[in-house]
Structure formats: structure tokens, C-alpha cells
Length: 183
Image (tube, rainbow, N blue to C red; front, top):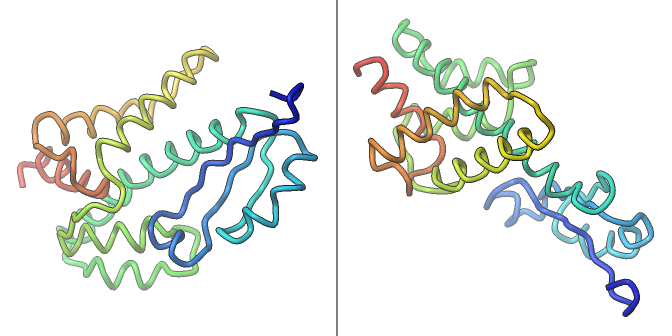
């Protein structure tokens, strides 16, 4: 492509619908530094672009992002269930944690979905499982084991295949946790 004067970046995004609407997406760009420099003004209209490395690095960053999202959703589900069954108010816990080390967009947005049982899709569970599978495939190419990601993969597979959860929001992993606990 370069011989023909064509250049490219791989620049996946994170931030969901809310980030897209607000123009605050995290943009992970892989590619040549000079090409990135030319594209920054266009990318900046959608969010915060960061060059993360050479060609392919944007996609690799997206896999890392989705791995973090999947595992974090799993642990937020566990924390919300523990809070609820222990007698605490999960909404108050989310509020108390704002600004602390455990705070995150996932805790605030997906934790709310879990406690209100609103699993209307933002990010689909089936898309999350696809991303987990892609991350594990990439890890395998580097002879890496990702045990937490493997555990979350098993849980999403159960949600999708045994609970008809493919088209639910990925925070519906909470429902799989309820099932595991006989609730």
C-alpha cells in the first residue's frame, strides 16, 4: 500500500455508546508515527487518540481492553452480589467507592445495571465472548496462559449457551453468577 501512497492505522475505540455520543472515546492507534501525527486532528474529534505502537498494536490494545472489561465485569458482579446478600445497599457501595482505588466506569455503569437488573444491551455478551476468544487466541500465539480470562470465558459461555444470554448486555454475567449460587 505504501508504494501506492496509501497509509493506514488500526485504531479501535473504547468507551461505548456514551463515549461515542460525548466524543470522549479512548482511541488506541497502531501504525507509523508520521501517519498517526497526520490523523490526530481527525481522531481527536471522536475522543482521545494515543499511538500505542506499530501496525497491529491498536488491535492488540483493544484485546487487552476487552480482557480488562470482561474480568472486571466478573468481579463487579461478585462484589455486588456479596454486598446485596450481606445486607448492604449496592448503590450506596458504588457511591462510597467513587474516587477510590476500586472505582471504575465498569463499577458505576455495569454495577448499576446489575443491581437494577437492567440488561438491555449496550455491549452484547456474544461480542464480549468473541473478544475473549480472540484475546485467548492471541495469548496462545505467544504461549501465554490467562487463567482469569479463561474463567470468565467459561462464565460467558454458560450465559450464552445455557441461559440464552447472547443478546443481553455483557453485565448480564451477573445472572450467570446468580445461577451458580442457586439464586
